Image 1 (cartoon, rainbow, N blue to C red):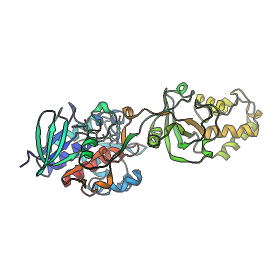
Image 2: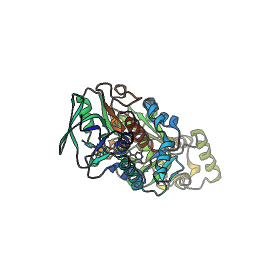
Image 3: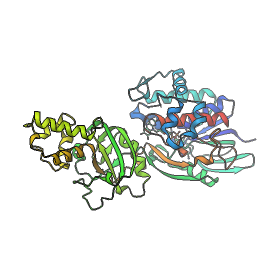
Image 4: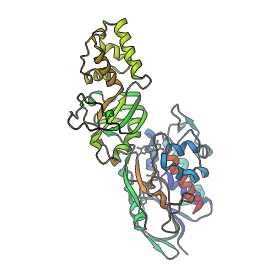
Length: 426
Ligand SMILES: Cc1cc2nc3c(=O)[nH]c(=O)nc-3n(C[C@H](O)[C@H](O)[C@H](O)COP(=O)(O)OP(=O)(O)OC[C@H]3O[C@@H](n4cnc5c(N)ncnc54)[C@H](O)[C@@H]3O)c2cc1C
């Protein structure tokens, strides 16, 4: 008889859920955690408010995951977004939906979410072993032998929930990839996702701290190697055509480049590219208006308020300092009068507001990535049970899998759902 029927490795969102579910089903369950405390990422998530899921249904979650979404069908059927909300509410954590569809605890305290998860896990009878990282995992007759920092133990079934390799200071150093690979699984190259983007554009640091609420950002390949990558006037990168991804949302200028939800959401296209410096963020700072209408609006302003400085006119549509950037990038002096603009200049100005190219210099990497893209290949895991197809009784859940979702609570939802299903089927 093994020491434990089930050992779960990693007490994050997925592991806490998996251990609670397995133990609730009567499985004698041990949850191993490397850190002194469980759920460190939950505490720091959503700016310490924890955006625990999204106000949508299972289909909405599947769609947000794109091509890998169908892997989540069974997990979401077992525990969908409404179930997550109900589960936390039943544990004494009322939730609220914000305008963006993000679901948070009403208290705005991630600590409440974590406390509820720990309560559910403890109530289930699972045992939690802290500061006890798994160091080795081997197959043995009747199950597995696990070597931790403190002891050796045996288990009939193992659920790996050790996360990815982003924010390594949280304990997530990619340990699970090593064991999964040693046991025959393919690891899709891990890379940072939901990560701030670096740029050498000289104007960005001058605007640091400024948020622009609604920007359409496209990641585009450029052949513009000759132009000044510091952010001088450039050919439009869209002429080459290859738009890798696009998103719309809030945009934050920083001293190193760009952050905020929209930048994080497009970042996986950058970390997945083999030459990120060949990419531009092509930004539409007025996505509500098309280029033609904007040009007409400018022409009207030239007639009705022709004596006004262009800088003042543009400032009514956007943040004043950004207006200066538009003018500078269109090579037009800010003190020019609206009426003095030629048609060519007007179109150049419209282009700079609707297609401002920000050269990409890279990202802040795993250190600052909210999630890891890549991981245990999905086609080697049975999505109905989360059992791997290489070794019997070895299960996977959470970010360790090759699954990463957009900003908005999707990543916790996937971690909760897959954790729950693995605990249900082990
Ligand atoms: C700053 C930040 C903010 C975020 N905000 C949100 C948000 O608001 N909404 C959202 O949906 N997502 C958010 N995320 C993403 C979300 O935190 C992750 O997707 C989620 O935590 C993944 O859950 P997991 O259980 O798979 O992995 P993790 O939560 O990373 O847990 C893995 C656990 O395994 C442990 N471990 C690792 N190796 C070992 C080992 N050898 N032995 C034992 N234990 C081990 C780790 O210490 C860790 O506790 C955020 C992430 C970050 C970094």
